[in-house]
Length: 115
Image (cartoon, rainbow, N blue to C red; front, side):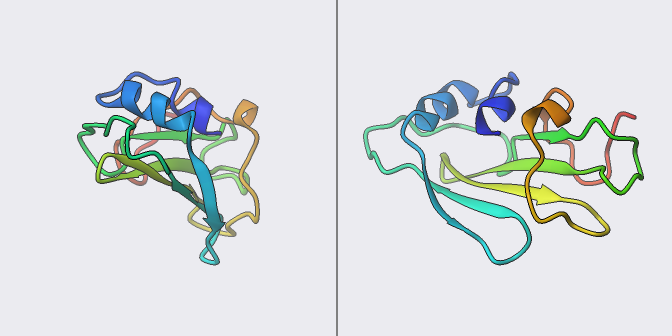
């Protein structure tokens, strides 16, 4: 999933791709499907991103369907920090496969979807 999101071009992505080589899953959060990430190396370049949520991907399912979801990457203090799965009704228990997502793009905010 992380590789899929980092396949998009956006400010700071090169540093995040480098961090992805070292990233560890800290824990799966108990609040919906969220995966907390940690980059253990202090030597890894910090990413200069425009927003805390620099990239997102929406599912390939029809907008408004029960299977339509959004995956968002979070970056805190220039480091990978979390993957979050969003759906505005009936949140699924697991992340979809990357093949079930549209190409990632810079984050535009909730509810902004190109159908």
